Length: 233
Image (cartoon, rainbow, N blue to C red; front, side, top):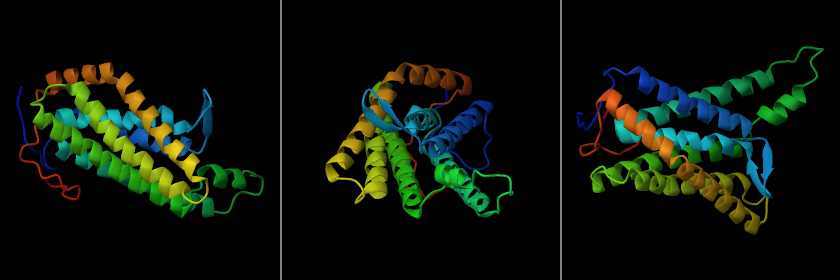
């Protein structure tokens, strides 16, 4: 198995890597669409996106662990670009005049419409959370010399998901709900996502082990520059 330090834009991408990218982006886009539904589970009020959004973090862990921070950084920005396209064309479609017989314009705007505040909260929380998650996991891999994968995946999720939940809920709802409820929402979402990650740890182990064998690579980011804006290193 080759230990690598960085990748470039002109390298080839395996079918397994492309599959992970598809799962990552699909999880992200799906979560943003279904997040408008609020569910109640054991008296916990959560967005429906809770059932799939943590998968993007799990896939992000696998990407960083196997392929390194450099490739994970490109995938995170690709997800951001795809999400931007989704939101843009949902908005454009909302502006088009509905057919006379189509009476669901208000429902369309209610379910798929985004306010600028919610969009800003979602985009910022995504970028900060995902990049922090990947950074922490990569640094922990170096410090632990590749051991204790469970500690790296859970530890990076604690930080990344914590920042994601804090930023999104604070920016989206500050001033519109009582501060006590705001804090509870942040804590409940953070803990739920982290528990999700912990439960999925055996599957993360299987995916990482499988991909390292198939790809014959195990990247340690010794020479990687961790600036999220550097897409060529």
